[in-house]
Image (cartoon, rainbow, N blue to C red; front, side, top):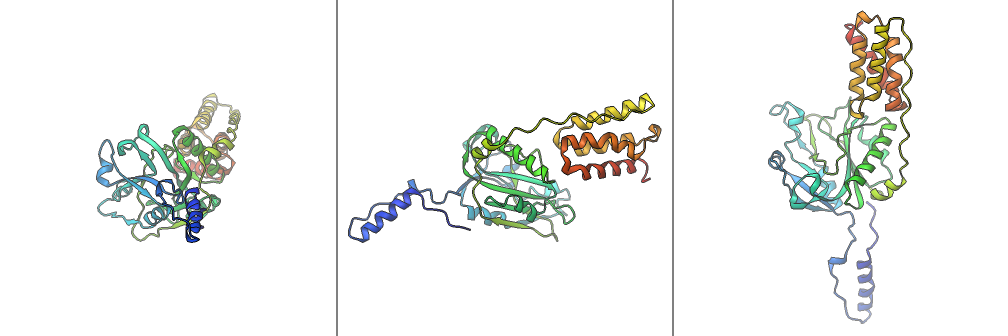
Length: 326
């Protein structure tokens, strides 16, 4: 970790201390004006019991960056026997939110400010690759409970240069970063965008490796970043569906293509698979090439060129599943 520059309060004290050594009176130094450890973070911790209650009232903590690194680098081992459902298992170590809340009550309306911004990467989530994507920033990246060698997942934590008090500004910056991650072929949890979002405490599935990287860089400036973001380009118009001699089949192709094009961000993959499966019904008499031609264009128009191979593979898998593997 690189050393922080001295804050004005401490710099002033240092100068006065030198003067005192030379014969002047030693000045008092109050920590009230000290901002040297600018990486201090407000964290709300929820134990499993606190997590289960409504409303969720947690325990506030003031943590240095080193404290947070230590906390997130020490995962609890899960118990898949007692908790076979991983969504239940990962709750057993509690959860945390990098925010200060009124009355320590975790809800969006009670957020005073956020001290960090976090992202959950559910696809392409190799820890080392994700850490490189944020190489300019001070960051923590660690694998999540569901992560496997074949399908790695991870969480990214970026401390803020100053607390963010505006939920809309936070979510605007969050959306812009998700778009950039998607452009780099990461699949990001679109639901993890709320300023009051909870992060489960780090856990590792027995026998799997817990991957962790903490690295230095500049703290993330939400306001500066948001001001630099260009509005997203309007989506491309849906590609035209090739004409089919049978009107019913043509209607089915057009309806499926429109559904894929109109899908919400988090539903695109699922809907693409569903529509490809439907179009593969033998009575429609469509080939894999025809189904791909109808659906891949709308999917790529909304999801981006980086996900073209993913889209083609999804269509192929769904088509063959509908045809019994043929």
